Amino acid sequence: MAEVLSQNEIDQLLAGINSGEIKESDLTEFKKSNEIFNYDFRKPNRVPKDQLKTIRTLHENFSETFGFYLASKLQTMATIDLIAVDQLRYSEYVLSISNPSCIYIFDIKESDGKAVLELTPELVLVIVERLLGGSGAKTSSGRSITPIEQKLMRPLISQALVSLTKAWSPVQALHFDLAGFESNPDFVQIAPASEIVIVISFEIKVGEESFLMNLCYPSFALEDVIARLSVQYFSRVQSEKDKQRIRQIMGNQLKKTSMDVRIILGTSKITVRDLLSMEKGDVLVLDSSIDSTLPVIVKDQVKFRGRPGMRDGNMAVRITDIVKE
Image 1 (spheres, rainbow, N blue to C red):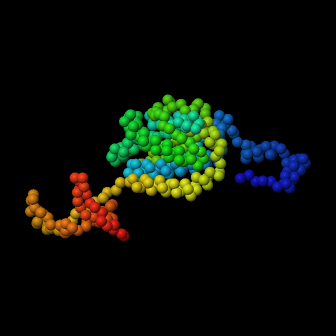
Image 2 (image 1 turned 90 degrees about the horizontal axis):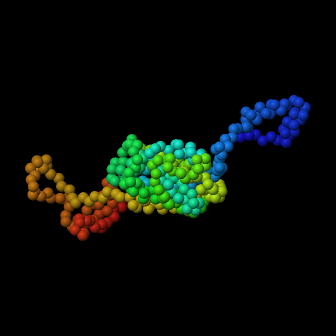
Image 3 (image 1 turned 135 degrees about the horizontal axis):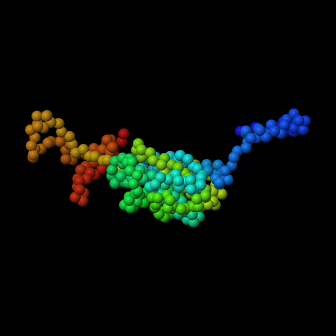
């Protein structure tokens, strides 16, 4: 941080220049080595650092909310971490996108502009496999996403835009609508090549694998919104109301999570000799009676007790007691 001179030091400096003790060339050399920097007029910083910090905070909330949804949808560990918030020319951003890629274009209703959500094909293939009941193993295939896989991803991308709308709500009510999909970045023209764009980069971890996701906003599309950003929104987005909203979202997603439930009808002990001699039609006597309650096991823990029976032609159990720890 630069040191501020006192009035006495300023007077001594001016006196030294007038008397010749301090040469102006010395001051010039000091400026060149400490204060003067090259400025690239082709890459201006449209958004001040304080406003970029606010944008970062808003999208940290987005990554947290959408991460909860992704984990519940895929039924596995999934987290989203914000890596960086940068501003660069749109042509530079397009050159950084691999081909093929998964680029979802969406409209920003309030500004008549467009933005993009970019995913890697590897991430989309892992998500699709998990949605279809697979293990979600990472593949090295660089192929384009098929129309069927695009259909499967559409509800998930729509939910991402809903989470993005909620993240921007403390600043301004913005609404995002999915407008299209493109795999070739050269065909995505949401801004002129020289236009400055804001790129927010995320790391998505699904199980043990990690992938990248990018959000790209043209600066002109958010010009009015950016002008309203200030440091005061840091406290707003972290207010107790928003924390309560996040807790509610977590609770709702947990309520939708499926769990394994087992009922033990009874147990019996026999010798190995009897086991080897058993034939079709033999009867094993269990240690439970027909009118006794049975343990209902949730995730290897006895949570309830109930009675077996039938309902609508299916085997069922009626819960009679709640087992307290």
